[in-house]
Image (tube, rainbow, N blue to C red; front, side, top):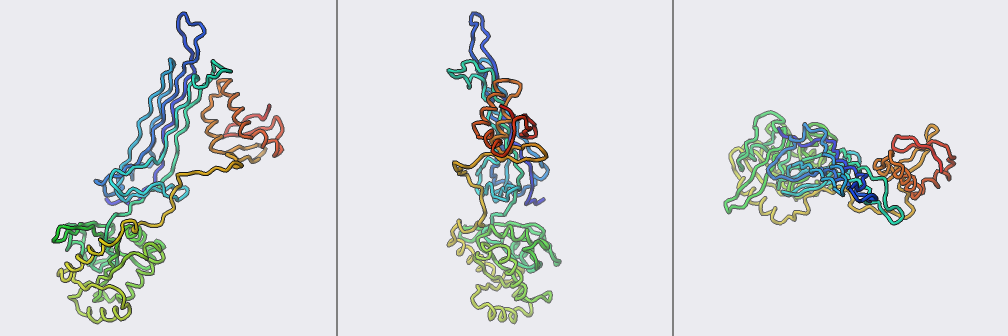
Length: 424
């Protein structure tokens, strides 16, 4: 089964908890802290595997969760890191953040890999907090929560040439005549419900990949019929070979068919519309071909038109040779869409607060990734940890900001769903 789009929830592993421990050895009555730190939680990593051709392996895995890092132990023993989860995907897979729509990664080459969800770091053991002022800290950290991401994976086939056109114009027949691919061929519309790939090998031993893409209809760029599937896969190709039933065997007008599909391509993407395009006038062995071909050339005198009969293989060898020569002149960098990628650099200005404070139903609600992470990693059953939590919040300027907004001592403050009292 060909699957080219899946949505998933990824939960990276939580870091292991740090340990609060002290040396308990005979003849060492005042042993210092020796609590080890926790191990790192497992990452979720996507790896490109050229042996795969569909996303079907991911279709039934709606939630993928990595393991937690091992907790730290006494005697300065650090917890082991959790194993990473490796998810293999076919070349041409684009991974999107489903919340923002931004591209996380575009995996096109075998063994390309990217960490899509990062595991949390291990919490520090109490030995890590020892200072001159506090040589025996009685607290440690909990592990950092792993990253949670909702993602969408899209597979856009990596073909050199895409055969585009209305249903039943001969795209599948052409693919079958020049490659070892065996697409389903019949005389009814939408025989091709998913893309077919084949490798064209020329007499000199050179080759390229040809894709037969699902037929289009008017309104495809807005989701009608199989159009979005067609357009998505066509966006990866270097050359568009626009196949027309130039004989009009089903009473269609090849000029109208061409203009309809060009309109949908332009509506979908400027990058797709600007790709190299040739016109393949198919069914040259049928009545009415010459008349329609003359009309088309008169209407579009600048278009490169190749007359063929896919059924009889007439003119096909010259077409394939021309396509290979054209591909050799196109730079690989020009085949990709203009996508919005996630930035790997985050700029923080000095006056930017890492939190927000709002009053909701009588509560002062504090939100922010940094604050919520600090909360999740604090052991509230250890007094020194609680005091550190308060100092950290004060150091972020939260006390001062609450007072500026009108909060009074004794007011209730909520962080990550938990309620505290605002006090000295």
